Image (tube, rainbow, N blue to C red):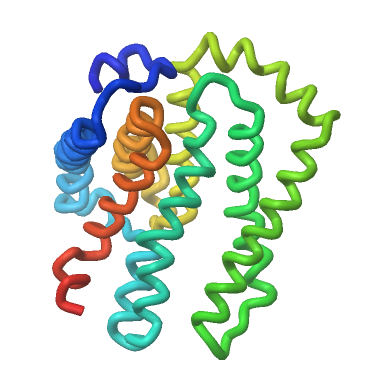
Length: 248
């Protein structure tokens, strides 16, 4: 993986068995958490010294509320965060991480826009009497907005513009890989509770998401999108507490 990170490319592993690919997956899983431990050390030290406040993810805070006050919502929330969200994230950010493929790029851009614009629009039509209905409305809004932009991006006029980046895309895999990784990390700002005074530490706060992005991206390129999705699911299972999931 280190050699890949020094010089990313779009080369996939073709001749490995499924067993070998899953061994690579678990190695990357372990490396991901080793990387997280390293990048979290300075953040933890700064928090202990009270130089920076506690940083919380909004979805984790929501889960704590659900576990405490709205237990019936729990299955819907976990299905959303552990299964649906990883699929949406991987297709939004990393489906296009390959030699230029106009269709893949169009799907990624459409889902990226749909994830944020659709989620915003759904706030105006959420059905408050039912968490399930609200969640369903949320994802339907994302699908509708993504589908709308997909149709726009697949028009010949837009396709002609997208095709112009083919050469840059294929000859600069490192630039594309790290650009997508950076965007993935930066967009997590919207899922964090951060004090205004701590915004200066944003690069440090976002480092864990950079680690995630590097790992997901590596698996996407080398093994394919389904393996980056599997790793993303594994990470989310641990984030929301494997022991807690087993107990319930």
